[in-house]
Length: 410
Image (cartoon, rainbow, N blue to C red; front, side):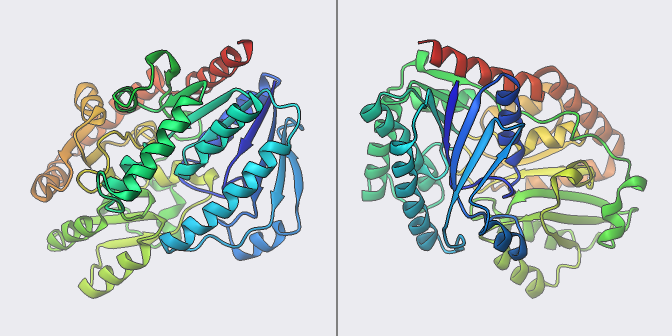
């Protein structure tokens, strides 16, 4: 089987969910699938020195030669949304060109970032009759609406819906990451038999509980091991409700034992830095993304870990960081839209769910966990058990392999 990937991001670029692609590619290679991708010069999550090195690397192979990476030149990703959209558009045109040019393709596999990416697979299916699998990690244009970028029934919304319908119609399979996603696109006319629900997983052997006394990040960043830490790991963007989180940190400044650690980067990081400086929040610590080999250290850093979003932005989403929190035996503290995530947390007793934007409930949940460390331990153990029973790397990647085989057999 020959799989064609077309993505705006590729190794060595790093994001919180990068491990999903690596695990998937390793599983495909183990099953003898040959993979080819075309990707722009890397820029996300790497140093400028490393980027300069990769400007000279136009081709490389990974996974014992099963994965071939072809790189094309592209300027660095801008922070401003408009310029980022322009870069996405340029990459999109190059990807379509390479998709039309590449020979011996059995299936095209594309993810939903950026939202227009799925159109390439739809066009290749329509023009070249190549089977197309669409991996839906975010529902578009709903995400534009949720982030305030578009208005329902406005121009951007209507264009987004046309792109969405065209993509779904010409996909042989749409892989979604939750039952809520499935309900969302079925309501838009996607047949149930075309949809496969595959939850994002966690590598249960890579993300484990590291005792605090052995966690080098405390020493590296001068963190007092005797404090109670609430951690946020991942993208620090427009939808993560960082303004409210900073307000919560300010409200709890009177208790110096309670500390907040944000590990990551994103479009809103500079704004967060300004808020921290303006409000003199000495209980907030900002750490950069850490290497993947230290992922257990990152998710073991806190006593509690956060899943947070602005109201209306996470209605159909279950962030994959949730599973990493659980795998590290840490309780999940969610301030999120009510959806499948609430059901999982409450049913399996692996944390506390509060409604997105409810600041008082959020603070009360923090104080409840702060005053009951045994409850934290119980929630953490329950989360680890849930991961081992439902969301291991082997379970998740095998489902992708099965979908690939089922499409090619047709």
